[in-house]
Image (cartoon, rainbow, N blue to C red; front, side, top):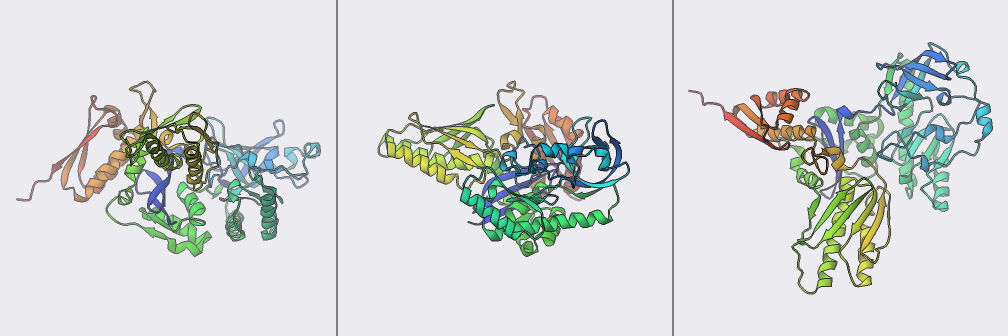
Amino acid sequence: MYKELVINADGPEIRVAVLENGNIVELYIDRQDESNISGNIYKGRVQRVLPGMQAAFVDIGLNQAAFIYVDEVLNGRTSPRVKNFIKEDPEDGDIPGNNMTDPEEVDPMEDTGPEEVEDKPPIETLIHDGQEMLAQIARSPIGSKGARLTTYVSLPGRFLVLMPTVDHVGISRRITDEEERLRLKELVEGLREQQYGYIVRTAGEGVEKEVLAREMAFLSNLWNDIVEQNKTASAPSLLHQELTVTLRCVRDLLTHEADKVTIDSPVVFKSVSSFISKFMPRLKDSVTLYTGEEPIFDLYNLEVDIQRALKKKVWLKCGGYIIIENTEALVSIDVNTGRYVGKRNFEETILKTNLEALKEIAYQVRLRNLGGIIIIDFIDMEIKANQEKVYNLLKEALVKDKARTNVLPMSDMGLIQMTRKRVVKALPRMLCEPCFYCEGEGTLLSKKSICYNIYRDIKRRSTDMCAHRIRLKVNHVIAKLLLGEERELVSRLEARTKADICIYPAPDFHLEQYEIVEDLRKADS
């Protein structure tokens, strides 16, 4: 299967599409206003040790001082448990490339017990005011609280987490096969060149020796680079920044799966090329810069699929359709025959609709990043063999999904219950917000998404545009945003189109509605 990453970074947000044989199957979006410094590594300076709280304030160069508890300070006299290196599971789950791993993935070390607490020295004997230290962000700042630090560094890969400050190899608890657990542990212990600790993540199940060796080398090189920087950097300074969504996808997908990466931004292309040259030099020829005039997502016909993934109703080729509803507790998917009436008998019509629907369901679940409990209401089938066929083919269709799924057999009522581990925030929740027209009963595009769509629309037209002025008529809420917080978008468009952009508020416009009118330049007399 041919896999490709298409990265749209020539705009206000970064969008990374994963394509399989030309079809988008995953979409990652990164908006700068949602940045998270969790996982970043700094060289900091201790400002003040607080013996009464067994904590210390550390200057890492942010507006607020970070703080560290005694439990997070390296202590050579104890054998800390692996859980010291595992951060609390984020809302979005075990994200590939995220600094955070799943607590349930890790077996505790054998040398744990009460003596660990008794052997813990007071913080004032471990660090002192003015001391320089290498530390990682365990939790980003929240409100008036500064960032929380740890000196137990962890560097995540797709299949492994490197823990350079502890000598231990752990296996994900979600890998339940004892023979596979033993195989992975022996592989990692045999491949270790330094006494670094490793956790094999759930995604590592079934991975071959060569793949693990490449990832171990990558993580080891990354850590060595951080150590070298720490020797010469002044405090406070940033030594390692948690990877952007672009670099995370390059690291996780290009290394093991994707054949090609296409990027439309020279700046991001340079960043990715530098990253690959440093850590994955054998893949440097896999990255190309797109310089065409047509927007890169339009070139690959991705915008239509993305918009389709935000709709409740998804039509099938046969004329049937599925309805996808997100609730607080679960996701419900309903299959309907719609316009399809079949050619022979009713049972055959139902079976064909269900078979086509299950493929679309597996596709939409993955593209939309739907997680948690999912209930699928297939059209009732009388023949037991047909029910089993739909169940088995649904399981097959979900094999390509890297998120962990569990599918139960079809019930007598035609329902299939399944669970899917939440990998990232669901696409509709990321791009949409509750609708104020219907008091939260439905959703519509968020105001930022509308502004970005307008930006892309005008940019798309700019190739053939010869206007001296562009009149943009939008809902008054969007007008206020474009004239204020998103003014930079308008300035960038004016520079690109060489035209003045005049924004006209229209209170009667729907929030998502807009109108673009070009005032053409007069011909030279």
